[in-house]
Image: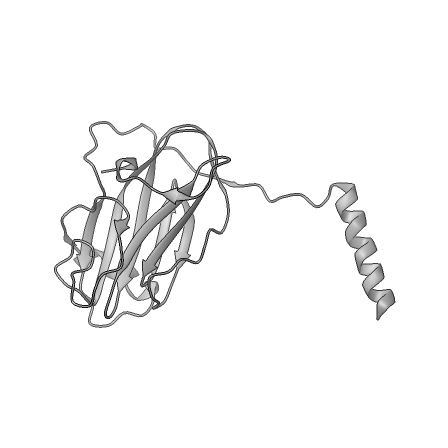
Length: 192
């Protein structure tokens, strides 16, 4: 057994020394082209009120029935108390939201994104799925998965699908720019 472990460690060291072991390239986000002008603050949101939802794929086909809601200020909705309305919807429970707009990155480089949600959420920025935490759960994050390359400053398209089933809800976003620590994403970074 020791010989097998030693052989595996030697092989791993050889791969590392050869340079074959490299960090995976960051997925590149696609900048909106043309860049939008005259954006309103926040994000557009449309709601549906399904009788029961436990996973994101259960609401993927309901978008055609969604009703326009009051725009979101951004992803800045802390955990609610039971009975408080979810986001800007008309209900506290059994709510699904389809969110779209733009997010502005002030500088190029590798960025990280993470959300806190209750319940499930899927987020696409610049054509890339940057975050997904499916199923029912309390207000929590799965952490950040990967870094994403922002090739140049500007506006990037954003689409999210989110749902809340029972009790409380939340939707919050943090980001970390190149060489920076995570911080809450300011509402001014969003437009629609």
